[in-house]
Image 1 (tube, helix red, strand yellow):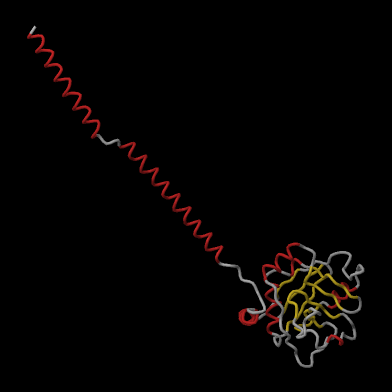
Image 2 (image 1 turned 60 degrees about the horizontal axis):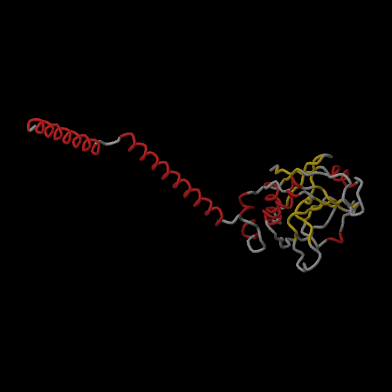
Length: 249
């Protein structure tokens, strides 16, 4: 009995130490696969957080920086600088009836720079010759297109101070900007809408009222064709006369 008891005690001790060693071994053995997965997952999470933060900061910067718009306060400085960098003086107005080339006067630097700026912004490409006053003028730079209104909003709301050239008259072929007739004692020009004098004897009752900033040097026969299209009661052509404008030199 004593011998059997001793044998049982000996086996129990061996089993105990064996289990302890195995348990200790398992506890201290690194789980390489699990560790790698955990690190990799954390790394991806950190990267996603960084990307999200960078994107958020970028969007915040874009929101903080309002787009540039022309106003009565900043137009003079902007257009004078723009005119120095963009000295072109010849613009082509393209229509289905043909092309009209307009020579811009350097003596009206703000008006010239404004017209070049709008041409290069592709503003006029969203507009028509929208008014035809028979035997008087044709007028362009407006339309009923939504994109035209959007572009005006993006460019800005402003008017241009007069730049009269002494002795210059509204003769046939003269090009000038229109103006608001109400609450405009200084005859500031509207920046977007221009007209070409068609009248053979000129339109001298307009002298001193508008800034003449250019003249037609080629394509008056095209302007005459446009002046003869059918119009409705508001002098709007019954068929739209689309404009494409480009700077020649």
